[in-house]
Amino acid sequence: MPLLPLFLVVVYGLCLLFIVCFSLGQWQLTRLALRAYAGPPALPPPAPAAWPRVTVQLPLYNEQNVVERIIDATAALDYPAGLLHIQVLDDSNDATVGLAAARVVHHTAQGLRISHVRRLNREGYKAGALRHGLTETDGEFIAIFDADFVPEPDFLRRTVPYFLQDAAVGVVQTRWGHLNQHESLLTRLQAFGLDAHFLIEQVGRTFAGFFINFNGTGGIWRRTCIDDAGGWHIDTLTEDLDLSYRAQLRGWRFIYRPEIVAPAELPAVMDALKSQQFRWTKGAAETARKHLGTMWRSSQPLATKLQASFHLLNSSVYVVIMLMALLSVPLVFVREDYREFKFVFQLASVFLVGFAPLIYYYYTAWRLAQGKSRLYPGFFLLFLSVSMGLALHNARAVILGWMGQRTPFVRTPKAGSSGRTKRRYRTGGVGFLVLLEGLLAVYFAFGLGCGIYFGDAGLLPFHTLLTFGFAAVCYYSVRHAR
Image (cartoon, one colour):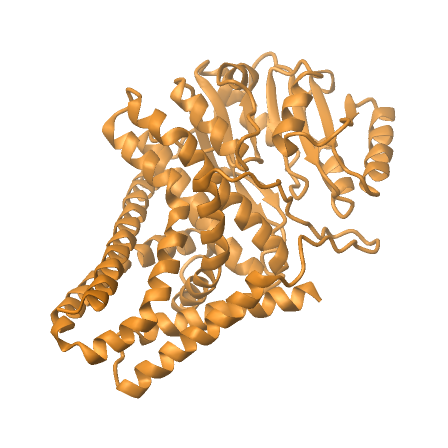
């Protein structure tokens, strides 16, 4: 039996098995989330007789399109004025500084306790800013909002009481809403994916008592929880996920409330989306590298350890998808020239049934967010295709995270909705990676054509999705960089 074709078939089969396991993990979370939704709705805790001191931290770096909006939104929070402190943690080096300073002066004149905090350097990026801010405030609870968020006025009054009924609660996380979901195809696809995370994953994990993560924004921490877990570390790009695991390993409880929504702006251009995806996927790999061993050495139940491993290794699916994609074109020729593998490929087609749970997972999230719609099948395929198109970009991020290679924190540019002329922040031009994405679109189109030529439809759906996904990502990357 020829060794190279055998090697290709075995590796492809292992990748397919990984995808099936990933899909089954999503199915389990869907089942848990539906059980949570089927139960009686949780009653919100009563308002306390005396409210505690709360600090709202706004980490900023060059956000002139949205800085005034986020400062004004947090200034409008309905909370006893003497107990609220807003910190504008401004590491900017552009017009954001002046805009922020003006809004701070305005709200200070209105009697609000609000500080414009400037550091000498950007050491530690967002985590460094949050850590520095804690040295200049006396808040017992710390709410955090990124610059693209617009919290509702009642946010603190709805979240703070959860801490006061249980001293073991370290975090209350809320669901992200979408200010500009219908702005473009990219924003609709992002909303689709984020809704699955916030309506299924976070709900399912919370219901089962598994570890969840603070999502970096739209949530509130107990100050003593941050301190007890060791504070904000600067050695990963996802300081939120890192601190979440350290806190929960210390025994702190996290509460997730999907009915409390914190609206936010979605990246509307490809370079902004890519910078966000890079930070999330690489940071998750870094956090897995940092905490998986500690998790398995802990006294947590086996089910919690398994779910935590699945959680931390979630981004690894992009590496597997990329490997499967690269192998799939040679496999077109293996299927044609080596008939002895026919049974293996037939067996692999049975494994494709394992994708059904993934379809169900996203459908459940779609139904919870949008209601029933005949548009779901087409939209799911479009989401799947573009997600595959991001596989090269995200797989690179994951591998760098596994290797422990340090990279700078690249913030996600926001466009905002102000009437003034918007500044177009860029995270990079059309580089080699974009060119490679275009070449991969041609590569998968070649595989698609070969399958049609040989009359073999086995890999046609996969190659169709890959061709369209990589072509779309390359097209938008070039278009939005111009």
